[in-house]
Length: 339
Image (cartoon, rainbow, N blue to C red):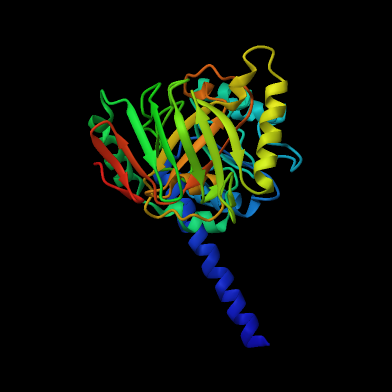
């Protein structure tokens, strides 16, 4: 029994040291924390172990640091308590390691306007820390930024998979090449783990079929989901009981709109992963950045400059996609081919 206890203690110590090592990379490389920075780590009971490692890593650099815990009852998109929002406005660096995302809150927007560098890590856990967070983000940024010329003046996208996806659309905004994991400029905000390239489809341009066979909103799928798209809108959803749940959510969003209620069914976003260390694990952020995977999101596209302000956005990841952009092949059977 004593030997088993010693072994468990050793495993826990090694695990804690590994976690702290990744946390050091987050605060030093991803956020470039300096001694003079005021750092705020926000967590909740579900993610407090990760937050403690981030706190300890930052505390080795600066003593101007605070760890605060928000109520576990706060839902995604709910406003952060005012007392915490006040702290955010006075912080140079903010790490939001919570179960749900709070990047679309007024508190986050106000802190960004004040110049805070903000890393959001919704749903973070030990498994995600050991995969996607360990990417070489400096090399990743160099690779992603180096692909800028590939996307210039090309607009027609065709996505296919062996599972049945066959969709064409025209891009409606510039491709986003900023999800590199390096959040070092004042006012910068980003998700961690990072490493994807994405774009908003031009409203009304997409037609075809999307088959999601990997994960949906962080849930590993046992049965694929099929979405039929016409003129940029979802016209039908097929699958197991999850398909019915998705329909109900979109119908509820539709009922809340006064005009152009069909916007709730908008094809909002397309992107593909570039992070070679990420794995498909059932965590939305990590799943979307898996190198060679691709995802579609549906609903609200206003964050990318669209007009579908519907208050709901959800999506899923496809396995081994192929994707072309005009005359360039971006992905081929789950492998990144453009560079």
